[in-house]
Image (tube, rainbow, N blue to C red; front, side):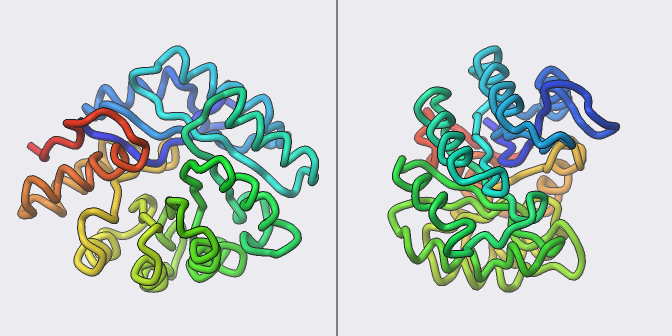
Length: 261
């Protein structure tokens, strides 16, 4: 089973990039991807309640394909953010939640603007994902996630883009954060293949996950790149990167992440 660890869906086509769950399923089928972590693509009107609700609805329609995560934006207000996190876990039953200090414009480990919400999310005991990219290096530097991960060693953190999403990448810092904190797992999306290869060599295949960053990149193209990059790796390593790591982190059924063919 192949699991894409980074996909964005929308309730409707807001712009030229937005895709609905139905379009994502079509793209997954084309790429022979079995399941995908999905979170919202922030809309221009910033109505993340509507979009989180849409992610939930999509995960109900495609319960055997989509692995839903919520999205919290501290810039929308303190009580609203606490309410969003609670709703995502208690009402929607999401598998985790994501914070994006680049698109939503905040420092992810700010003691007042962000950490109270991270602490509340961590209290639910589920994985927390962060956009970690060079597109907003001050807000989302890998060292900031390292700071957070050190405070919550019992929580698994997903590092989306592992310092990529722009140039020059922060991938070396991302790997260093992973070395310091075994509860950080890197998603190699929107990042150069050399950085992904380096991360696997340093951290091992058990710490790096395949992700496409749909709809910003095509899943079938990104998966082809992973197949080429790790064609000489062992079947166990291939299986871990392609889906096994995510399956383990989310406590999914066994026998996932079959080797690349």
